[in-house]
Image 1 (cartoon, rainbow, N blue to C red):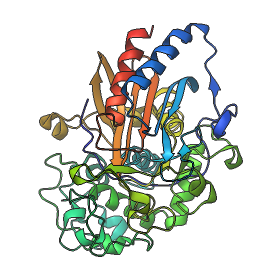
Image 2: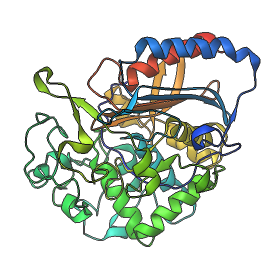
Image 3: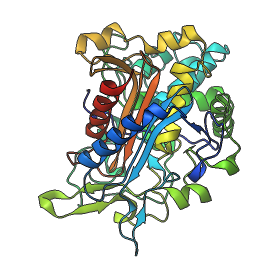
Length: 410
């Protein structure tokens, strides 16, 4: 399992993916009717109970060909309410960098439609607005080979973010961070500098997807057009109507999002308990850096089911992209193979429990996500949590569940 050092991810969609029949909490898919699943379901329940931290908010789902094989909720979505709010089917989590895969798939659809070119410099779409635009291509952005450095640690931008975003001590006073004033791309662009030897090496940097989202907005007619396009793109997988329940969103102001979004918790230094990122710096509602434009590296929030539906539609049912595009998306680049971290176009390879899985992990401000599809059996396992810094983040939980699945699958 690759470590979840893949932080930051955002984007918003209204509607579910692969909707068939409404279940509790708005998830519009059918349960798998196979009676032989009972032993597997019980084993997965026991594994989740065994590995989850006490009180930790967790959603997990195992999906196969559009049907739910197993799903479960554990712990608290929001701890500092009276009474605390428990996780249920409708609870939404910040996906972190799993959103890169969603944005990447949408970008590749625009390539299929002839609106973007993978291998032409992005200056064709953004002019000279962004450093390196005359050399960097969309393929480089998708594969983390553009050579950009970490915008969140740049002197021009580091003070815009809360402590802990890039390893600063959690719980200290932020310098200029304001969780209520929306970010603009111009603010982030101030920290984007000339890339280092574009196209020659793999270096996972969130900056690539900040730039990618900007390219989409400039090329496709503005932010509203891109957000509508993403909604329609995912609806092509079989989305239910919004009133049937939103599974993925980038709209942090929507009533459904505000009602259902969990809070993210991370441990304070020196064992001083947990920090609630949603309230620590005076956010009114959901902090502005949690999701949405310009944060193409982590624009989405949603449920475990929503995340699983995306991969099921993409890798199993072929509902989102042409087969040749999916094959290119899954193929690790030579640059990434040299680092030992196989990465294709917005997609990671995870060799685990004797299986080859494709997907993406993520995490941000207490939230963690791990979502992969077993290419051999077509099963997708998704885990999202709202507490980082424990022995039971989404990676650890996912691994325990994946072991149970592989040992019980036929």
